[in-house]
Length: 185
Image 1 (tube, rainbow, N blue to C red):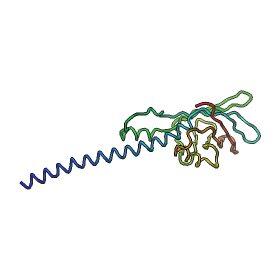
Image 2: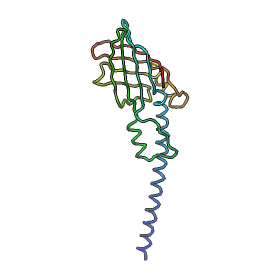
Image 3: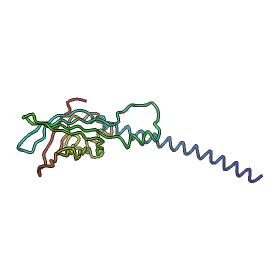
């Protein structure tokens, strides 16, 4: 008789443990979804086409930067599964297309996929063997990038209109300054 009671008790505790586990998974998914939505604010605020210049002090060249989210927000009216959320966290990035040209109309460009920005400090580092330059782009400007990023993540700012940057050439030892403004979403 005692063996039957112990077995029934253990089975009951197992079922209770499953419920607790499911509740913990749901709570964890809700927390992850809130974090994901906060991160999406950053990506949405920066996505778009920017145009401007980069200069080494002596010469200027035109610059176009297109930032496209790898995973657009498709929105759902439910709590996503942990697997869905993990996939989005791992794959949330920008595809970056950069084109530069001078007044002589000679142009070069490159595309870099899966660029993961530093959303805490408001920096997007675009580095690839396929690009003749590497780019460090700052939300708003170099000195206030972290503050501007914080305003985006808190929901106080929904759109970024300009990026300030530093361009490092593979062929020159000097760094160049870049400034671009958003021309389209």
